[in-house]
Image (cartoon, rainbow, N blue to C red):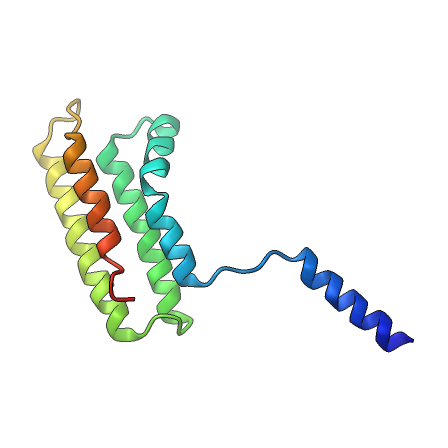
Length: 124
């Protein structure tokens, strides 16, 4: 009887706990929600689009590092993704220096940067 109750309790605990996403699912979500999250951050913080893009890139970098530390992303793929991401971050910083503080970048460039963010993880 006690064994059956334990099984029921364990089953109920599993039902009530949300499934944990893999780090690759989390990374995919970070990338897919980037446009929306950038807009939310701009409204909340008053930061420009490029600064908010840096925030998204930093979040992605953290997930990549967690994935590598937990063994969900192998070393070579992690290093390649980090290299691509750093290149994107450097590009964004360059655009920040180029564009006046009050000037926003064109929508086409925003789309290009979001696509480039997605390509960071192509080989994971």
